[in-house]
Length: 417
Image (cartoon, rainbow, N blue to C red; front, side, top):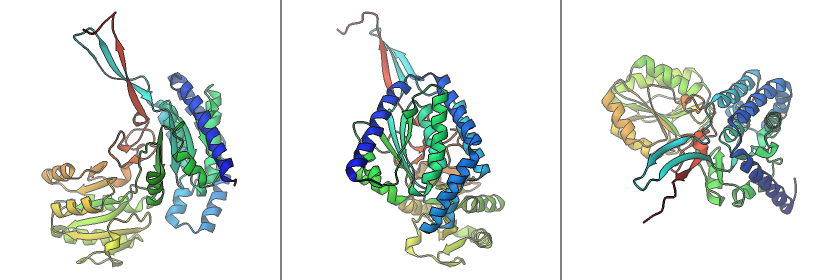
């Protein structure tokens, strides 16, 4: 688009506007934020034909770029998915406002009354790939939590994100809130990302949402604190005490419902004593069109190699391996997991307890599809990502996780001896 100097000026301008908007949003009434999100949902639905037309341009771009079928699925919008965007906006609107919530309060013998109160982070930069619905989710959650946001969508979703962003701005204006509270970087130029990562005067935190390449770039180059949404190398372990029908239902759903999302299962671990069940699950996956990269002792589509352990396919591919016991499964997950989501299929409470105790992923599940690893499914309305780090936010990042806190201390002429 433009030379580096122009990109720098563009991003600095976005930063200045965002910081000014954040100062207003910090004390915006809850009713105004709710009104803005409801109006945005109305606008998205009213302009759905426009959004689908914009998405068609992005799909053409994606095809020309040679995106995989799973990535094209991530990119595609239809009326059903647009209805989902509207539902997400309304769900966030209906949530309690986290800003100003008292987290704890206590009295001191000195006569002081102390409260710890939720407060916005300030300005959030969100960098994401492919999925245009993240534009709405991130914008909504940042607004609900009193934060201004600078959105930088993937080059593939450029037109779709722009159309959805226009609806969010329409909502802000309808509620009398600053239009600069939700801004979208208006260029595909990669220099804009590098600028955003170093805007310490304006941006308080960066949330990257995408593959290993994107997150790695952000972690290497950011001068702003980062909530990392790393790849989803998701394991399901079939224990010797697994229920066959539950296991069949859950594994097929976890892999095939949508292969291109971060909660899709990527590796199946099978207890040696559950080999017959494990092979039946593999056969069912193969019949459903999944390529199974099978380890020793298993019949799959192709033999697994070392490279298959620790791979996020985001496609109709899964790795499968036999393990000697629960501890061997735990060992494998500790070695190859991205700390996103891991699951156990078992009817043995002690086995589940050991799995939960000894694996430290952001989300651990028992007898449930890993496709539930989603802020909306957790009751958060939506999510800005799944944080796989351990600082501040972890797991689905909703509105509450996008706040910090401050202490309010009250006395009555109180002095310290």
